[in-house]
Length: 326
Image (cartoon, rainbow, N blue to C red; front, side, top):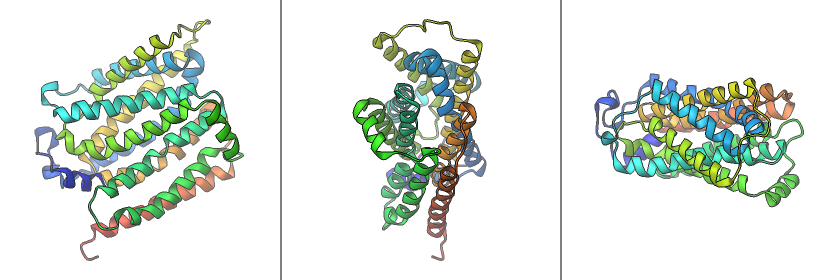
């Protein structure tokens, strides 16, 4: 779907790093597969960030994760020279990336209870639906939004069931949690919106240059500023070796995920990645259950089936649009 947005907002000029993606029309199945790896890596984000936050605190834990992740990206995925970055992509895309990363990491860390952490995760996981609807909206195809809306609704209901856990989401309790501590929910919603805008529009702005390895260290700087401004210091008790290990695991999963996603949206099929992204919350809930020692209930599996059904609906819509005989 972002390919539609790319064509509507201007065809990227072919570059050396954009080989095989000439004119923005040809996509690489290999790049799409790399992008799909991001969804698998992101599944470890919620559980690992929560474990790190419990040991280091919300702001310090987030700053440490993104500092380590930024170093890993600079070592293993060196960015192109800054002069090769289009200014619009570097400035607007960079701000969207930094805002999303900072907001979601802090929102998970600032959630006051395990239940509110699940609710914040659900708000964050609105981004696949936002991305699908936004990409359809800018595609300039007739009734595109209405065609993908049924699948988006089915998948979003599935996300609510899957993320809700054993007892499902208590909407009355969730409303109380939002009233008592609204900041993490507001951050999660604003971040989800920012990420959907980033995913849909930056492929056209970037001209094939991936800024993930540049943007990620900027997130670390922003999080350190937030940490020092918050007045929170070092934990009273020294964190264990296991806690430091989870900092590295979280950094590798998140940094690797965004590196794969950045490559995928620039050179692969954004439409397929958008549809597949509905699997992110289901995989994340499953991974969190394993990491945090929780059981997966019937609502989770029902939600997973609905997510799959919604994704299939949107895939069939996209396949029909691409079929020249229809």
